[in-house]
Image 1: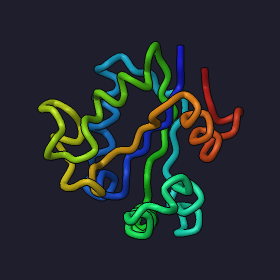
Image 2: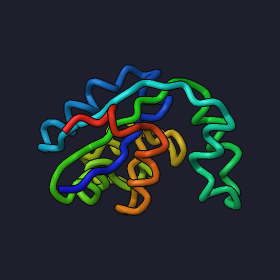
Image 3: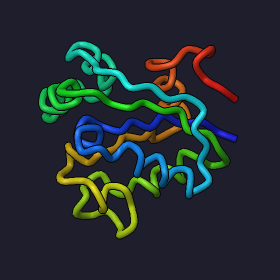
Image 4: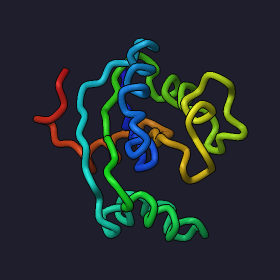
Length: 138
């Protein structure tokens, strides 16, 4: 069993897609063991995305991610990092496979509805950013 972080980004929350996205996780047999809605400040977003601080998109990404509430979740299951990334689809919704979350709901590379950890190491760091041990069930 493995855990990963998933975020429904501000565009997904604003467009009332939270239930639909959760339904897709559940239908794929992915468990949700923690969930919360938060509105991050720009500085909190800068801390979360610090690994991208030297990338040209860092400022627009952190501005966008602090523009409205997000839903952070800890997903649980066998091979869940890979399975979640397949369910999300390619970062650019134009390149995402039909049936994926980003293909169905994403509008561009930044407003692509969801974020998911890309490795077990990053998942551990990202989960700890949002959740303490008492908030994770299971």
